[in-house]
Length: 116
Image (tube, rainbow, N blue to C red; front, side):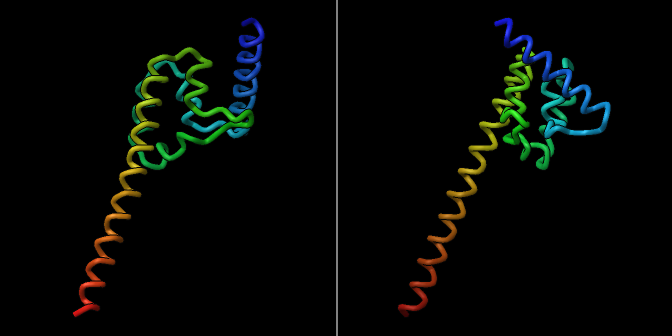
């Protein structure tokens, strides 16, 4: 447990140094917002498609914004990010299914026209 706290403190120090130097160390704005106490920024960010697409980006240790929220013990952010990830995955499935349905409909329609 103490090792986890030490590692989290080191990661926060690296993030602070990176922010001061304008270096990212592959930390996305969403990861920073996940540790912020005020959820307004995170909610606004999740409303945009380009930010929402970075939900699954990983930092140099392979952690996502959800992992950052867990490390910072920001449970409201954890809840928001889990819902956003679930919605993003479901939307991708729906898009895939609807495109498959469109393709099947198109194939049936063209087969009917060709058989006439």
